[in-house]
Length: 355
Image (cartoon, rainbow, N blue to C red; front, side):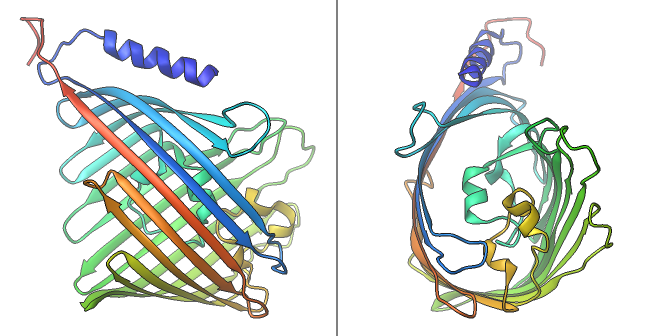
């Protein structure tokens, strides 16, 4: 409730700001999404069968000036269906400055994760992470051109306290296209430290690098074929056994037509989540399959994914079939998302407004 009250105060304050620039405008919008995610992971090491069914509403408002500058405030209201307790399970604050340039974009504050351009595979962020942890708290700087992009972000994920670890992550991503081929890479550098109640040092360093090359082309179907090398560098300072370097290769093939997608991921390599037994998803935000107990896994996904009404409505539905070398598991998912934003122009009442 404190977050809701604070967001309301900020939004009202925006409306009360005197219009000093003739180009100043007011903007408001909202995002809504509902996701059903059913996972049958019985027998998978460190995995479990579970179902998520959740809705979120994200109203936001702000001011736009100079055509490229935006100051926004809002609140992320989140609820798991049938969860006992408050009507709203969780709230999160949105409060950020954004710059939208011809080639450079920048954000500072607390903003939605979908503002990122990077191609981060599920080794970096699982479906659950992308949906449930949908905010970046920090900074994001981007460069875009017709041939590619580059971005760097700092995300503060945990505040040092008696109940939470200090966590922050640096993210880098870039891609260059020389049609029909492309090449790029992504990198995550994570600092994972103590809670204030710990009496001894328990810092974990977790770095993940993804270097890839691929080709996109059309032959009645739209094809995207990518080969990646995943390299991690990890150290649990408490264990005093030095750095570890688990790694692997991945081949991704995607076929699309009329919004229907068939995707296949084949991974061959080490267990990338070397300290999962000690820290679990607190440390590793990626998909559980990268534990790769048998040295490989394969995952096939059949889905429908399309946007309607000028991109304001997004519908996804499908089934994912991960195979860990011993057993086929299943995941069924449906997500409906709406995002609308309106800019309201206004004329200045101040005849002496600055140009």
